[in-house]
Image (cartoon, rainbow, N blue to C red; front, top):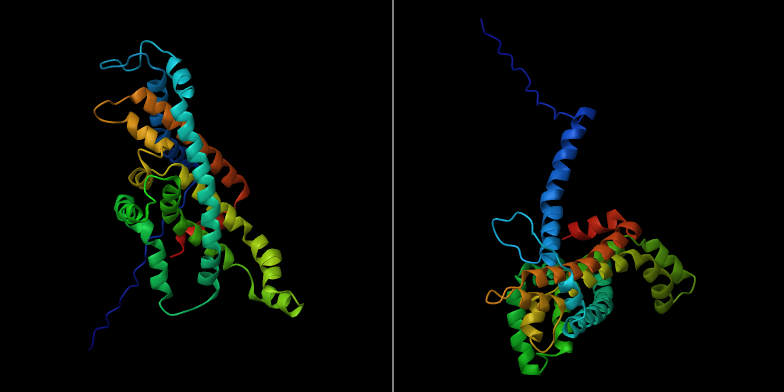
Length: 288
């Protein structure tokens, strides 16, 4: 007689779902990680900025002073660096948007061969280390007389901000229905009218997202600006680097400049969280 072999189906264990009792452990882990990653460094920076002498084995400073804050906020060179950073970031943001819009429209609406390769080429400036890009571009700018100038710093920063703007704009423009554009054309709208009354209004979320990210990227950009512009063109990140010089490190002053650099990023991300859609940011960040 032939024996019958029965094979029992394997049951894949199901993932345990979170229960209300798990919330306390998840909250402790989440807030503990945020404390270690954000709160503790910020607290140490603040203590360094107001410490009047702080050396081991002291856990916290014994004496405090606000004289450094008053002195550095009245420093004309720091104010000039802050103005340079703000003006350069504004110009970089507008130029990046102007360049990215037609490029993103082509990437979103027109299929063509080697499109994947073009997307990778667009991302190359953020894939390659910034210092490598800065050294290469710096050599070219020296030949064209753009090194050590505000124009050169603006152009080299656009190289870093353009890829992210194109990604976000592409994600926004892909959501515009073709039927809407065809309907506008059938009603007599020209190319300029379609761009002004349909494409640009619907692309505003992508423009805002890319603009905010470009502003922060330009405001806090260091390596490219340092290679191309320093010491003639000073921005806040370059000023921070000078305070962190290993031969004359000034941690209290560097902490104050770090707080000044942090403020625009904090404001921008608060604005982004209130006016931008999460799905747009996710689509832009995840699209390759």
